[in-house]
Length: 380
Image (cartoon, rainbow, N blue to C red; front, side, top):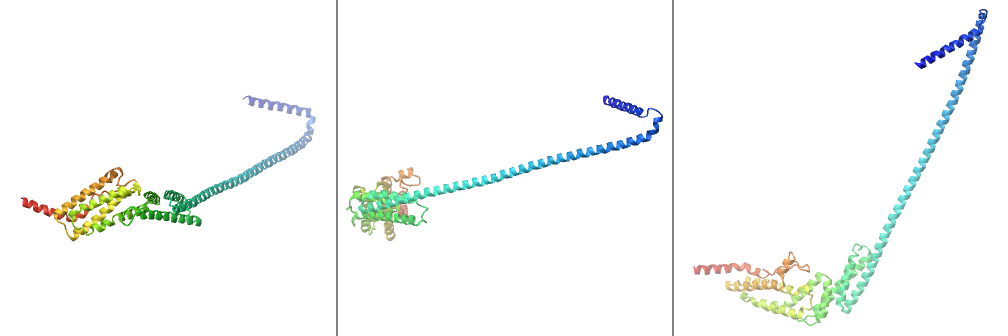
């Protein structure tokens, strides 16, 4: 409302000024005669003012366009500079990334080279140790130092296990073959010492101390060599048994066989036990080999001439007693209770002696049953 009044006031002032200006231009009625001239002058003046205003407006517009163009050019220049800086940073980032990748690859290559050098050094050191142990083993065997030879056999075995996987390398493969050959040769030489220590009748003739040391070397060569020596010893001790009882057909006198074994075991304990390590359980293996041989001989005897009931009972009773005594003597029941599955401390099976020989009597138990049936019928 106040603005409206102000505008109206200004319009009234302008009108008053115009009226005053007209009155000054035409003060009298005669002066109105020149009104056309005055009007033409005013029109011309108005045209001049309009042209002047138009010129000023165009100049002002031209000045504004230049400023805007300058602003746009400055903005475009800033954007271009910023893009160049971003491109430069991106290029430097790519260069840095490639540098980091190159450094990482170099580090990996150095780590791989370090591992290869370390592994090569370890293999070379083990090869030197194997060579030294094989030379020491060969010297010990030549000198008959069997305990030292046994230690060297274990050393060579352990060092050779560390070289597994390098068999494709010629020197390593050659060294491993050489080590195996020397180990086998040491086992055979030690077994020969043990074999020469007994004569053809199984009597001890060699030095038990040296033979025990040779057994220690054999034990280092593995269970196969140990079992081979044990089997040869058992076969030697039982050679006389085959000659004495092969023609024995009287099943009732089977107790004589067991008495013979007791004498052999007593002789083994008194004279031969110091030759073999206790862990070998040579006496047990000897008794088991005797049982297997006795079983086969009794089966052949009873097949050729079936026993009567009295002889069958007597022989079976002696056999069962013998098997129980063997289990007790060698601690088979205790070993089976302590080690599940009947496995001894050396990893070998320790089956019971029960039924080892008695199984030969099973096919002929019908004779005993028939005899008992006849006796029962007669008693009734």
